[in-house]
Length: 448
Image 1 (cartoon, helix red, strand yellow):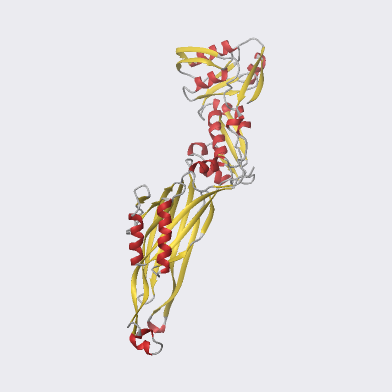
Image 2 (image 1 turned 90 degrees about the vertical axis):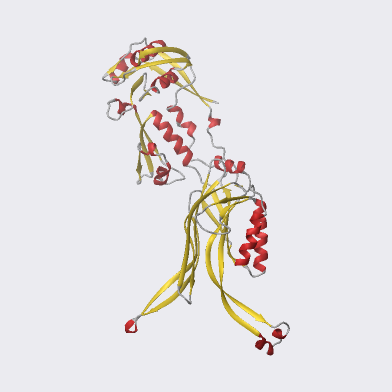
């Protein structure tokens, strides 16, 4: 526990000279000592060693809490928070004018309070065992009012830009982000807070002009968002399945319980559809895909591990380019390239509860038939919430694939030379489907 002590010298002569258009309340000259108690342990960010987060939501939350922050909020907020240490008072007001209530508080605490002319209205409230500033905070919370601590006195006014008291209540605060760009940090703030902030690109800082209560909210948001972001690894598997393989994969899902497999809806039509897998179903899926791959019924087209920052997009693309020509009159031909393949754009967001939201946007799977010049494309846009240890999967991206089929007479067809005359070789078009699995893992990169 750390204590900050502020001594306020109350001088009536100085008070009246400093403010105009106000009502001064005479008091005896007195030195009033007040203490502010602030527990730094509650707000300090405890930074730990690098930790790789695997399957525990508690570890995910620790990863978020232990991020390095740009500043120690406990060194800034005490200037604006109501002091909760010092002499305690009791006040009781029943349909009392706000100005009279503030006058009584000033009298009992022997502290000058300057009241702007725009402060009007009445109040009914009981204040028990509160300091001067806590009492002022309660009183001003009853309407669009606030107070500002000055040298030797307090000023109370209305929080409206059209009133003269606005400029007297506003604080100027400049903040230079450490882990975020000024524009990026500004975009993360609430719409309400953005109204009080301007971006200074030359200095790389944010300039705030806001009254005390609003400034406290803004500083807390700076503390929340300007921190070292965790990295998220997305383990992606892209698998091309034959019709037979699709049925086998469907059996894997049907063998699990409702707790093992959560089915969703991504707007695509498929036997496999889309959903979230628990660890046991995911393990069975991998074993089945491996067996199907050995049997020639499935092909793992890619298995990349993409690393990205929390809230940043990761992209996977695998395309084939085809050159096609379109005969025209007068011996001219139109030549163009056709691209087909897979494009996947994923943005992970680490939630406060340790879960990860994955946004899949503008993603597609396409195929091109060289013989018929037929082009097929399937698109998907969705978002999924995943708990630690779970895996996202989705299918529905169908396409035609050419397959060479060989039939032969047993034994004779295997004889070199003569066997050629006892074989048939032909091409067939088979319906295939591309499925994806995404397994997110949080990588904590904080250091002590």
